[in-house]
Length: 114
Length: 111
Image (cartoon, rainbow over all chains, first blue to last red; front, side):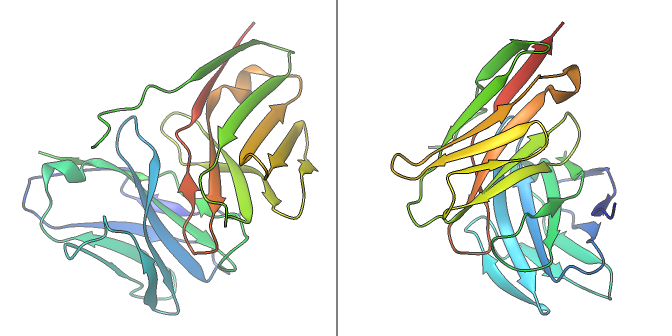
């Protein structure tokens, strides 16, 4: 069964450094998402992406965040200048259509900011 | 204010019993709902979904019930097995791209 894959599984970064989290969505999917889950808390929406542009973003997704689909398979989340409070699990998801479809999630990247 | 870590409600059931996990959703405009299972160290895994024009949907060993009047969703797992132990999240789709997740319920299955 096709799945969303994320790399790395764990990223440790010094505060203030840039980090790029990578995702390979399911191949025939057109809509891509990033969510985060701070330890012990809910899964929170960050951003959705379709047709090479952001279609929706949350208030968490401020100017330090950006997303990109650099080629036909990868979807990346960049955090420009990391803060301690960025420590969380970051999940990528994808769907074939935009709404009323289950979003399929990867196993996440655990980001630890020191 | 910010939550510093939510204490997850926990449901403990004996292997073979049926489990019922409940969820209250917030947005009356939501028309699509999903249940996800999250095992330790893994991402949310799709279990079953339901659209707002239905009040019940069955899958393999799982049933989702939707009560729009009181904005309530439940997940029933028949003959619960040790492999069902996980955190279960409901999620609602309020006619936008995003899913809004609930706080989750930890299901513990003991022999």
